[in-house]
Image 1: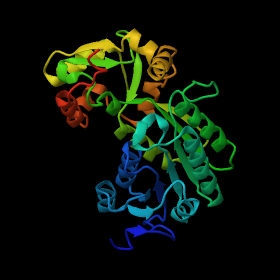
Image 2 (image 1 turned 180 degrees about the horizontal axis):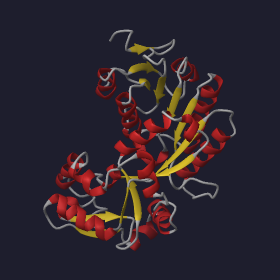
Image 3 (image 1 turned 45 degrees about the vertical axis):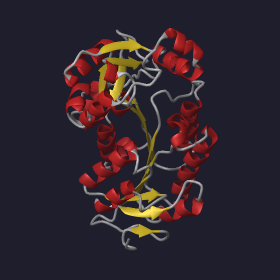
Length: 320
């Protein structure tokens, strides 16, 4: 691959405006959505990747995104990637994502603070950090949420123009394979009449791109973001309609939530409202324009995920 696309040191290529945004996690869901939305708005975009030959990294390159080879554990690679950039979008893997990343909560905090510190040292003009809607001054008891609160607090201590977004649950996570849809069932943490907010990652990208375009308006703000509200009953109706077959909704069984401390604590956080979300949807629509409803997402960008979930054998958890 040419040096124009993959670099290990030096500054990123500029754009007509001379402004480049470095996107972390660009091969993942949030970072990928942010990178595409920024490209659509005319920004120059660069990304830090561990494996430039991976198909996901190659797809970024084809979009015109400059790739830097590096890793959160290598401060030098972070510093090189930030040379001359205008803005940084920061997201780190977490222990809540399972064994795929093997990330501890302590590592997430270290890396999140490190990215912010280097951005401050490099004179980055606008820093956007993505957290979670359950973050805040009150501990949740879930390490992969409380780690984000620690990173937020550190970021606010720096003389760095920043915006913190706190997304609600991703619509994409509702379509994790093996959760019973192949058997005409669907399990979730919400109750039948309990409201929970969700957002499509595509809309996270659009919102972040708008934030970067107006630092005077968004600098120093913490925004809880969501695109729609669901209940168990609505999930049942929406999934039945979208799949063309009856889908029966159930909350995770109480026995399972008592047995599994991790799942039980997540359920508690939905019940006390912190994971259910408190975003002002009408205000967000006025500020950022139309946001995808769950039904529109199922009929559009979420359709492939729904079809996969409908054909993936249920796990023992979903069959309980």
